[in-house]
Image 1 (cartoon, rainbow, N blue to C red):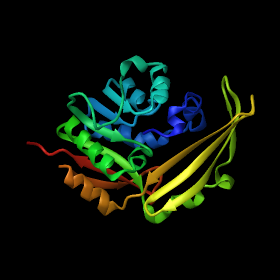
Image 2 (image 1 turned 90 degrees about the vertical axis):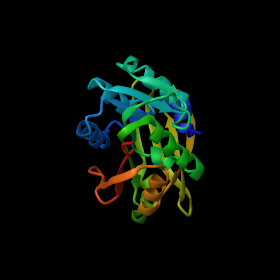
Image 3 (image 1 turned 45 degrees about the vertical axis):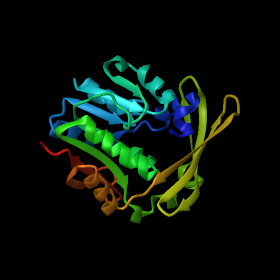
Image 4 (image 1 turned 135 degrees about the vertical axis):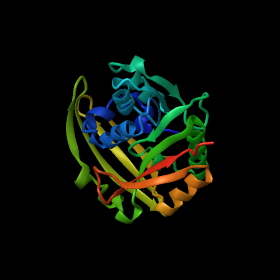
Length: 243
């Protein structure tokens, strides 16, 4: 189930303007080049930023996401017709044979239910050709990123074309073991409307993630430091074995 931020059309339309710097996607583009990927499955594609970057490079891309409002934004972007968009998740995909499957940004952590997580990894494994790769990132729990999720550290006002000024900030709601719940608030200056969106992320230890991958038939080739957040995130590079 997608969070309100991605299901509400008014909030989905804010996702890109409020986070315009997507330098975090550059390492994924380099990995696609490193693996010579010509067919890519982007799991949790959201508003399609990464999928469209791949498509611009002539790569055949399938983007899947459970939030229809986000997919509507993606489809409406220039080049949106180059990508095959699927409303759903990785647990029920049509037959695919891709070279690379990705979960960028918060996607892996947003799958909080252990059963859904295992099913997602299984779906990615089935979609990959033998020898194909799965790449995703997750925050290192020991860095306790949630300690900076507060209004003081996150408050901002952004001018959004066609919308006007939007005030936004995040508040930490609850930490329950590996589950961290937080709430984004948005105030629209044009009409004074206030919208909120609650999200939960699961912070998994490296050993847990590696065990989950192995249990679904993957080989873990590498665990890399995230170039944009050194020391704070891990990038898992897993592979579906040949044969």
